[in-house]
Length: 154
Image 1 (cartoon, rainbow, N blue to C red):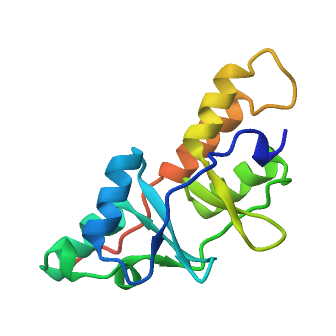
Image 2 (image 1 turned 90 degrees about the vertical axis):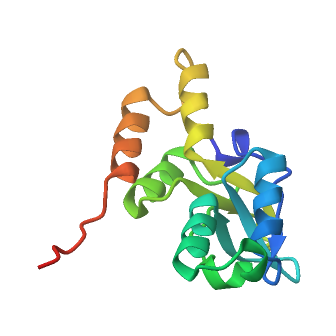
């Protein structure tokens, strides 16, 4: 099974100079927790709902006073639409990310593959071959969700 078979298409995007209020509104309207950050038609980063929350609380400013570029993840991992779904899941597990932008060979954003897409496909394809197994999905979700080690404060 290929990434393009289950990825989310028609993804809402924002721009580097948008403020966090604009990005949060996009997420609310699109019922999503991430928006790709674009510049001149190219992916420059990803912004998550967590980035917005942490940016606002750690900077002590209103969302409309903070630009997307200040809190986004730069140069996110990505995959190709023709990538094997198992390889994409391995990449997500290894790097502990819940979402991968899907970039075509021409460099254009074609969609996003999320762990949610994979979970839903695993449920739908229980009887088909080529889809992810429940075990693969659960193992990946456990690894992605593992807390990072935080140094002890003395």
